[in-house]
Length: 141
View 1 (cartoon, helix red, strand yellow):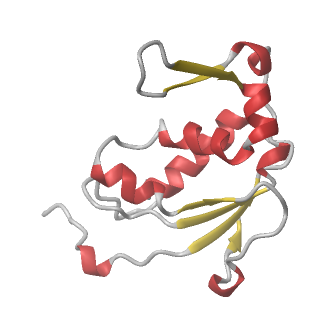
View 2 (cartoon, rainbow, N blue to C red; view 1 turned 180 degrees about the horizontal axis):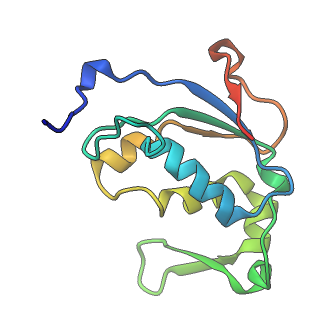
């Protein structure tokens, strides 16, 4: 018996709509990463981008457990000496809630070119409205 390996030209991607209102950040991001990778698919092949497109709505209404709002920090560097900046999760949710979910999912995907391709299929919106109605996304539970 031979192992089946999916070919790039046989991959069919679909669109999903996921509402993250009142859902926990970590649980949502693991589900999103699994769909972006395509691991739910029977014919999953690790070296190909087999995932689906996901439209996420209500990112500003996502929840976190514990004391993460005050104790979790996001760091970035400006490029200058001593230019490290940090911002708490609470301020990040007020300022840019899409980035919170984006960074959570990004950390769960493979590093390198394949992970970047997968991450491009994630569309995040802070409110109820999105601009992907033409793709007719199916609602995820």
